Length: 217
Image (cartoon, rainbow, N blue to C red; front, side, top):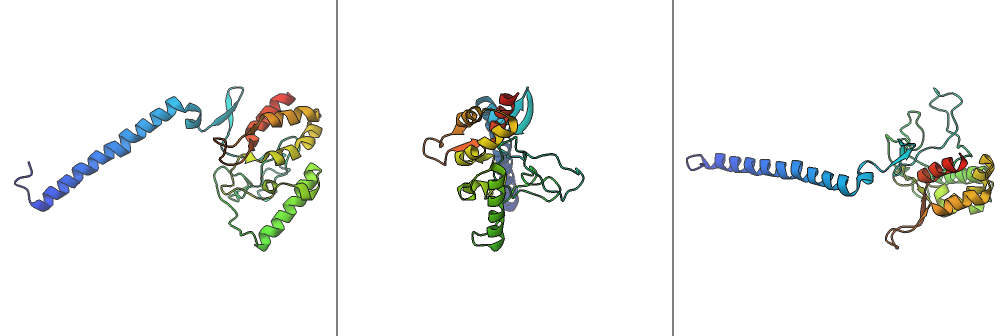
């Protein structure tokens, strides 16, 4: 059908046919296939790994969030959030767009981008160490590293078992629960390494606090 067309035009028409074919395959068929497989085989993950409470979604298990006391002045965007002693606290977060949402702003993701010898980071870690130690009632020298530093995304919901167990006494005291019950709850939420050798043991704070809410109910 291209026999009587100029060579340049035939090349353009051939390129257009290839473009349309790949658009259908990679832009329509492939995404639909991957979405369908995801919905069938990994429905929970495809929906965003939602954490529900009484059937209603309350969070995503992939995104950390603040467990803070209500602000004294909700309209004051400069007021710092105060951690609530009744909840296990996540690691620090640099994900703050500066619009009043505070750390773990779900609309923002990022790290501090400060090097280990940066004076600002050194001062920040020292301040966090003192604050966490006072909040949890422990020796500053025992505060784990993940209680002092933010993750690369600023939205990591996981903390180390060491930091989780450090908070047990404070949470139990604030909720008037036996410390052994809270410690057992933490032990039940410690996840092992992926495939037995990837990463480190961890605790998802979102899921732990959800279970804590039902334990204390």
